[in-house]
Length: 382
Image 1 (cartoon, one colour):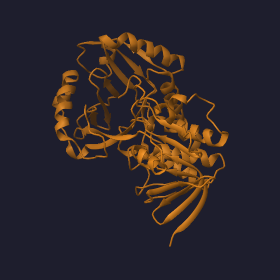
Image 2 (cartoon, rainbow, N blue to C red):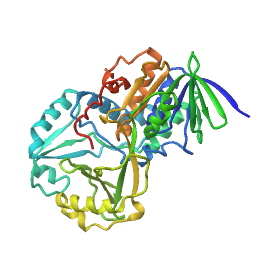
Image 3 (tube, rainbow, N blue to C red):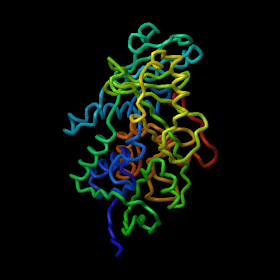
């Protein structure tokens, strides 16, 4: 027998973005239902991420979204009494000679937005994370950047949303969506959900979910591998450190090291199997910058793979879709969903409750930007 449910908003996806949206909508007084394909929260891209957050960007919009979100994580336990695992362990960006001038311009922009960032010479940077300084002009250090726990964050938002009456339904994959004239009707398993608004927070599946509604949302999964050393490999913690010239990045997790780097030409699609040959390439490339990396014992059982939810310009798709009243996208964060989830929830609630986003200009994030041509990527994409 089909179960019929009526609610104000259905949020599709219980990752960090969907969970944040659910809480902020419920806090605004709306009746919210969350539908999630997996058996629990943050089991897609969120829980398989590198879980690092930074406000060091080269464009004003990403700086604003990220810095607002980091401050939310920083104050979360004080404001809500729930931990999200935020640690201001820092972010160190190593910058090659040819990119140094542009990078310093980005620092000026970050500081204009109130982001704490220090410019370091190579010696000062080496005191934080040892590296071979060949070809490196300098580094920047973000002391408020760091890590969060995406499982804790998603769980916290859902806990608070439930306390406000939100219903969270796991193992409910949305298989159909149709407009009703006053909203939307979704099918998920043996349930039908009728609502005024749909929030598409399905991550890398956002394009598939949107296609059910006849929308072309260009989001694709792109695998990212995370490799790990054995426990005890490090005798002191290391912050998130990125060799921006090669894209290799690493940080400690307890007394082990995590390291990674995007693989050029990775085929789109959901794939969470670990690419072992790519680990050898990352070790070779990474050891040229971090010679000590080659001597650390590895632990294959500690490695994993997840996916970025990429758009062509590596910016999220956010806001109500033109021509589809009540359909609000919040997907395609291109590996930065954990970073920007707090403010994403705020903006989605603003869009729905106030009839538009007024606190920040999200014109560059709306789906309609892809109508004529694919936008170019912004800088500093890792």
